[in-house]
Image (cartoon, rainbow, N blue to C red; front, top):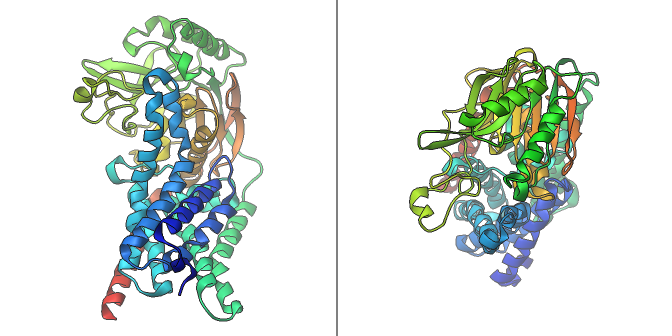
Length: 499
């Protein structure tokens, strides 16, 4: 009898939740990936203690709830901006978000137990079903791939594999590296053969080291970009007395000489709607002295509102507008928002009722000497499919964001880590302008070559690295991994039926 079967289901679920919380320590800002692998390595033991598919599902749900509750603890921060109105919602938001996302993992555990037999069969099935669950989490209901398993590798050489297999492929490799050693621990027999379970981890580490050894030390630059960080706390950002302070700060940093090839302000940095921004643009253009700018601003069009990026050309005229298309549910829009608004329910960043409207999709903008950039407004940098969705390949990625919503601890660093992943996946440099930080210049291998720390006002002028040729993942996306997982699932199902 498995030792885990001696424990009652609540005890096993409690242990699974603790392991899930420990697994989240692999994410930024901790980046303790060995703890994630160690926690996941105990899953075969927990799964062996289940007696029915339903029990396996509950264990998986508890594990994932612990993982997401720790990884997404920053979700309480937006509720602290206006504590009197929203503070009471914070614990409910964390519980429902963590518990809801955990349903994906619960389904994976249930299916692994239901459609496979024996410890080895169920562990291999879990590797496939959990990988499929993570892929589904990235797409279903607009997707929410935050805290994806591949993110534990951001601070290591293994992250370079993202250019080849993408985040879903790296998640599959991570599960192989964690669960196969765990299976070896519970299987009988001599130890030397069981050490073969460490082979996937060894392959990951060796491959990452090999790719890292080939990286150039001197990076060719195509232009100089200035990133401006006003450091406007969210509870002061729209205060009428503080708005001129932050705007003057942005203008002052913009006016500093020598002028670069492009100046970037963060998300919603211009404190007025686009249609009323003529005087503000004149002030900005005067400070920029002929330098093009990319600015975050809000705009309206009839009854619709948009979260936008505007490109001001050398004369201070609007040369291009990009409207954010992948909006944050319950943040930038509320499903059924006009009805919900009657009950006082609105997205945090939404203007009224339904909130922001979605733009038409990814759009490459020509920024002159800096090259062609693909704008990503805040949340959009979380989605690899959004980065790869433009009709043409850009020269660089441009993320403007307001991470003041995420507080000053876990959230902003996790958001930065995901931006670094997008750069590796596409082989493109990424310019990041964040209201409160971390603003950064990231090279095509995901290395941060210049940054402004969290909670600090200032600007940085950084050389924009040249882009690399399109990576394998940039050309294929998630389709190859989906095909591999579906083929493995079908093979396992037919094999089970043949028995």
